[in-house]
Length: 161
Image (tube, rainbow, N blue to C red; front, side, top):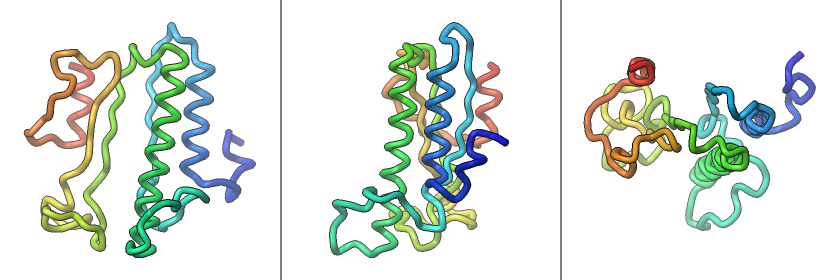
């Protein structure tokens, strides 16, 4: 049995993930390094989102677009909670925070101006959002934009360099 064992089908999965990360950060000794990999499922099908995350979107949007936007809103909320926990523990200045998606948007998403979507080799399917932040990020690269190509597998070699 693990931390989510008794919560199966009781809460939104990514809520459970983010709450667990915050618990671990809050209990972790600040003098010890911590590597944490969080694989959020948002935004992904099925289009589901906690109550309150759908409020405020334009009436002109389709239900699917509202749900997708609500899932992104929740992802922002969850990452914000992790960020705040790191800040509260004075761990942010010793953190390298990497955010990366796994693929481009789905076929019914608006990937404009890119052509294509998830499951195909065009830019709309393989170009994705990614960023690095945290106190360990050298000041010389803060606020800069990487224009070159990179593959997700490159992170390991980059971290070990």
